[in-house]
Length: 461
Ligand code: HEM
Image (cartoon, rainbow, N blue to C red; front, side, top):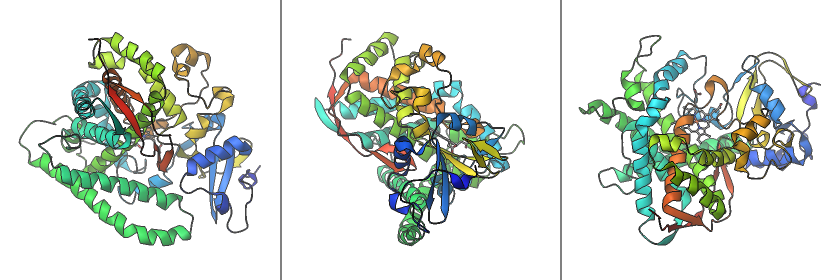
């Protein structure tokens, strides 16, 4: 069948399309609900003249991940982000030689050896977070604020050898950093609103929002420029081999060239954004699930204590903590989907997709597809990720990190950071009484700010 015959939401109107059934504030959760309500593994949404093809079935999603026939495509909030960071790793086109150059230069910064070297910086963030939380016996903690600060500190300390002053340090430029953090949040919200707003009406709204966004972008760029200038002016050897050190000093092994200065700025901003928003989302959602499940906290504590320490090797062996993280990534992938483009004409679920047609692969829905994940696909069950269960079901589609050469460069970084922070939190505290989970969308899928009770734990030694 031609794509024009794809199923679509009920109540479509001439010219307006599916405008009345759209949910610009929660677009991907709305698409998940439509898939589950029976629109099926592939359908379309149309807002005025703009059509988006949405793939929600795991088998079709797997087909779109075949690099021979499909390629990565930048659209949605990512495309808006391109206006702010045109040549960062996330936003640059694969055909631009700078993409390959940056991946080759930065690759060593995400190797196993690099993770080992970031471990201490990540652990120091856990120390500071727990010091903040541990000062009273029991307190209601703002989880959003705490995880924003912790994940930004991790990328600042591990990636850029710089304490950002978000977790109670004295020797830092707190106010500039706070302005920068607020600017990042506004920019993400603006980019998401730009891409999800309804056409025409959205253009008018953008006219109102955009001047504020430009001010925030200028604040973020100034912060990054200062960070780079400080490093260039520094006489100390500290940070020589962190991410910024690699960008400034290591020539591309293929071309022998250093990354251009303007590109370094784009990369630093990319890492500060990509390196914290998604990992904070993962940690917050996981803490929420744990706070609701004291028995799961105990089970993980047993594993954590069985490892005997929090050194690098002990943390990489915390398999049950990893299973919980994977299950959260499955149910609530912080990047809820990604765009793919047909390299040549394709047949997808019986529909003809012409060459050059983008489709949105909604991982949020494909991760819950009962055809491959079973009838309890929407329930939280970390045992799905035990090796035996995975061996039994090799077709289980799981892509929270994207796919192919453009998949997440920061996967090992995020997983090590999240495992370590969770293990340290569970060792030192008990969690309970979280406010309800409500997922907010701004390109990412992240819990709306919520509080939970954190109690200092009596340790057995
Ligand atoms: C790309 C997810 C953490 C840096 C991606 C993509 C996904 C993703 C799905 C591909 C998007 C697409 O195809 O359009 C996540 C998740 C994270 C996380 C779920 C945490 C839980 C990080 C961290 C960093 C990072 C910690 C850096 C320190 C990047 C970069 C890209 C990327 C630079 C673009 C890579 C390229 O196109 O070559 N991420 N990410 N991410 N991520 Fe992550």
